[in-house]
Length: 348
Image (tube, rainbow, N blue to C red; front, side, top):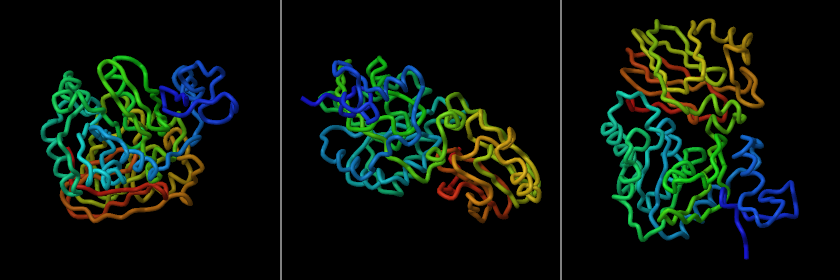
């Protein structure tokens, strides 16, 4: 009988200590990789990159209620992933995760309506949208919209918090959690506390900033505490450097910007005319860090230009977003070449 790791779903083996799924003793429940992540916070960068099409194929073979977990700070990454194509054909319940990390004055009902409008644009078949984090009755809310006789199938892009939600439902640390993407590796069937759950591997998003970072820097970028938005009143021709990961140059009159990013990420304000020279001299320094792995400035970066008018979010996949309000002008966003940048209607 095949035995799988109850933390990540990988098939266990005790013949190759360097291969995935290794255990010293086949009586163990967790693979060596999960054990090290759980007890030592250790993770090898890109030791496993999920096959997105295989994940979707595996999901299509399952029977149950699909739950689509979405990180509210990384909304567009989820909505532009191939899961949107999958959920145009399969009904799902959407869980907006990490809502407790938003500023406390955010209207969650209005936020849910914003997301509802976005999923209608992409023809997703959603049965309900739940927010998780601020409301203490999340588990009861989920029970009210799910069928107890059907398994729950957890889905989402990498690092949205699927395993954390599973552990909350089970009331125990069963599924392996870690800040680095691709913790769950296979369909992982879990039963306990009255639940029958299938945890799936998170889709790998190569266009995400998170794919460019090591584990220590991910901890600085992925919000873990309530985000304190910072408001900047800017003159035309000013620039915001988001660590050494991204830069937003604002050639906009009467402009203000509000950043919704991890509080551990330093934001440096300066003049756009001086920004290139600053980055060439100080890239990777305390002021302009962290930086992407294997990256150099300016060779590894691209500039994405937008026409600006009124109020809009400039969303950087896997990092967060900055809301800009101002008259007509130009907004340039500089990011690593692989990272996607999106302009959208302001969410907040």
